Length: 321
Image (cartoon, rainbow, N blue to C red; front, side, top):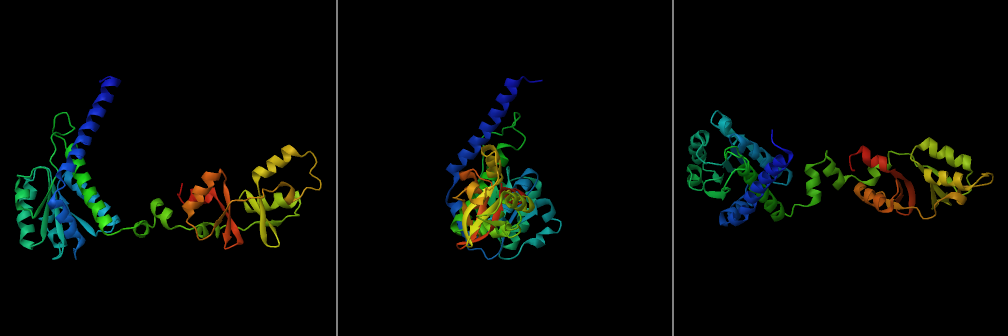
């Protein structure tokens, strides 16, 4: 068994090897890369990404990234392609074939069929002198000096380089399309990332009660209202205008500071500068405001009118935090 120091050093060396492989890619961003980006931008069809083994796994990730950033893409396993899946490919599609060696048997069998379709073929390859590179219309060079594997065998640095090159493609396409955060939200409606970009304060606060009391409300009325609505706070209104807020914390401070509660009203214990947010704001902005002001609730407004309360628990339930 290796010592703790040895294990740490092995991990550091592996990370450094892979980091070098990625850093070296910056020297290989050439005209072929630019032409591939331009070709995809003007593509009427989709990007078909194929590979075998570990390269197939990288291909799936590249497809997922492209789809989520506005480039319609499909994964096609290289082995399945020669057993019927070639039917996936349409006339206007572009094909990216991923391979470290560019000479695996499945790739050598597949490439002639891909050439027959007349589609543009891009080789994302770790050997620019390989069969795949020679047959491709464009070559994206992901050559690595050494795998992070101590035997220089297991795909480690090479697959990391493939992944980074795919990300570089996706990011360039995203930038060229002016793909905005709102566009991103359309493709991620169910996840936390998407919710941060489209979920509004109203989507959450409208599900809550809208607790309110007048400024002359008694302590009993205050406590009952806060308890019944379970938001940890109540808005204090005077002539339908917000004049303050009372939270659980205000109740505790009242008990600490007053022996006799007789005659106390809402105006005696309320906070007079409540933090507010319009219901049309993004929910994530409510989170930022809560954190900046170290509060758990915000008064929700519609224009200048009181419209309810949003609580930090509302954000937690939606996975915003």
